[in-house]
Length: 382
Image (spheres, rainbow, N blue to C red):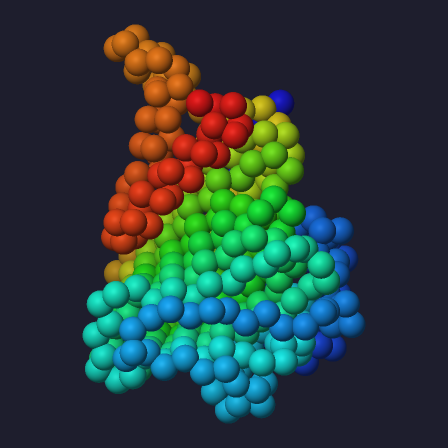
């Protein structure tokens, strides 16, 4: 039978109290019983915990306009490690293992109209590879950056994002790995005063994918919108752990993640932690996760956590829902003359459509709809 799990973890300590450090000894190898690791298949990611197992550093190829500066730098570069500290074992190992990094800079006031593509690709699984990417969008600038992950790798990385005052960034991370790939990555993001960040995660491929986006407001009046789409198939584990730290006045956050699951041992995990600090007056925050189970044997764990330390806010809330494919919707469409395959596709498209259209990059939107159709067909749901 399919398994549906919606968990409210009341026993865990405050998200703000969890350790973060650049030192390996401060974030020991997990056993799987820790709150941050209790849903993760430890045996699949065990090699990522030990720096000695790594085979080197993977660097991306970058395609973008001349206004954008792209540099390959040594790990001692002063621009690295300035956006928060690692918060779990994989991220601290990634920090201590990479040899070279990529720094992408959008200069002050630049309005970059065409997308910037940052591509990671692998030919075979092999030993773990570390990666480190810094994205710096200076004050009053705007850009659209698409991270693409394809092929097969065991990759453990960090993406540091700094959005300057009154800047605007849309960052899209596409995980379209081959079936055997393993990918862990920490997205650590600082948002300056009056700035806007749209952070989009799309996870379709990979045997095991574990992403941990952390947002920190460093200026008042900043906004973040976090969108996520995942389609988890047979034997895949897709895990997304978000943390939004409201610590300043008049900041806004919206989180919407949707996932579909099909096949035996398909497992999706979504954790949404939002902390509204004692001085974060005027905060406006909401997070939502929905999961659609398409057939038997899949499991979804969804854990929304909201901590509020002051009473002077605009609003805060969260919601989580997980359910099986709606046979009544299918029957309704088929009774209007549609064949079952078309009806199923329409129901799933309807589930994802609102979120996909918010990406507002037409060729990416169509690419995702085509990918959803391919997943449905591969799983026998078309």
